[in-house]
Amino acid sequence: MVKGSVARFAPEELERLRRPANGLAGGSTASPVKGERDSDRAMRPDRQTKEPPLPRPTFMDIALEEARLAAARNETPVGAVIVRGDEIIARGGNETRQRNDPTAHAEIVAIRAAAARLGSERLPDCDLYVTLEPCAMCAAAISFARIRRLYYGAADPKGGGVDAGPRFFSQPTCHHAPEVYSDIAARESAELLRGFFQARRS
Image 1 (cartoon, rainbow, N blue to C red):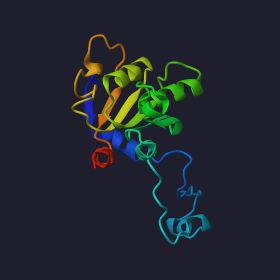
Image 2: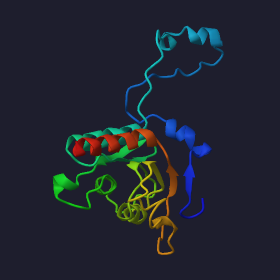
Image 3: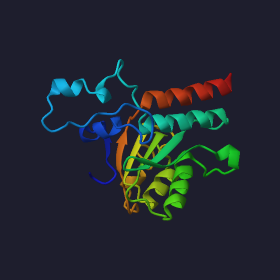
């Protein structure tokens, strides 16, 4: 991918985005037995279900959950999840008011937790899911952490730093640009933000 470019609904990533989060409830698929016919396999006990299993949450669903938890704390509802393969390494939401820390955006909270857990300031095998386009500060942290892929939800024309504003990953001073995929659960992410600020104005 060209440095700093943004992919929208990349076909090769759609299957990954549909992949359920590791360790959460869902149905299992039986392995075929050598010589077993399809009709026999369908009648095996582990294949008999009256209803299809409920879909498991995606990583962006979990980021949205963190955003809702942030709103419940009276924080701007933005959530982030860092994963390595199918494993959630860290998750978090905005904590700027709770910590009295203007840098405690969801991405920064998650990056700090992931780095502490893995014992490294760099996370080259990790992907970050966040409900809102990262600002310039968070884009820089993502670059410094060597995050492999960035998936974000709603665009932020006023405060974003990836596809808007400074477009940090396109700058010559940016030494690492992740693959970027936008508009993932954008409607749900934008509705959370819109509802939060409407409530504050009422």
